[in-house]
Image 1: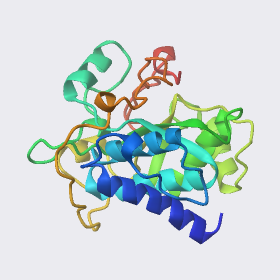
Image 2: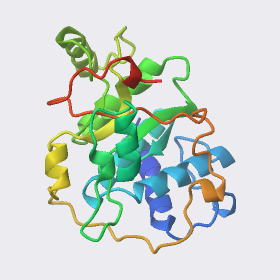
Image 3: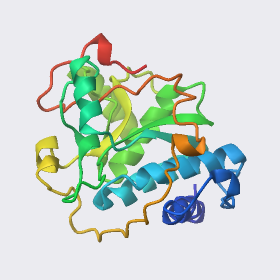
Amino acid sequence: MDNRTLAAVRSSYRSLLDKAGTAQHPSGAKPVASPAASASPDDVARRASNASRLQQMDPSVRDKMQAVLGDLEGQGYKPYVSESWRSKAQQHLDHLRGASTVDYGFHNVTGSKGEKQAMAMDVYNHGGAGQSSPNEFYMKLASAAKAHGLMTGIEWGLPQSNRKAIDTAIASHNYTAPIQRGWDPGHVQPSNISIGQASRGVKPFPGRPAAKAAAPTRALGTQSGLPDAVSMGGVRLPMFFDPATAPNPGPLNRWR
């Protein structure tokens, strides 16, 4: 993938992100031309949904998350952000039912006035390349995340030998290596701060300028008919945990 193609894909997301505060429905939006992916109605809806969820993220990480999505698009994938910000109430319920090992995480971060400023997103491949090889998609997601100062949960819950095998494969660009995935490979978060630091207002990339927030308007989610849960079969993505402090999450928390 050349630099012009990558720039065009990222520009696609930037355009949708800028318009996310005023878009009423993806069917009325102009497809954004990109040499890397066709602007089918499904693609327009997916990218608009992604842009809406990016708007719920902290400005210090938003551009990096957007760049990760652009990198995957440039390789023929169709990344879909199933969730970014999550309420503390929902997080607490997830914790109680055993779907999460933490009662507060990167998905729950808010600004000083309570505005949604998540520092994590959950991503999967909504069609496109790699449908028959999910390992390859998640390996490339992990690689793209690392390139932008982020990390995924692809190694979470695995023994050291398995984690080393993943690191070696990614370093050598061997994305089809027969690796075992950790329990949350689609979860993306900062790699340089802890959940505790995020809860205290610490920013992972403090030197980045704050992006202008879009004006409040009707959400692009379920109210507009976007496929929030259709492709997930109504099942929420499993939660992440802090690998530095949490135990092995067990079968209830494995990727599904």
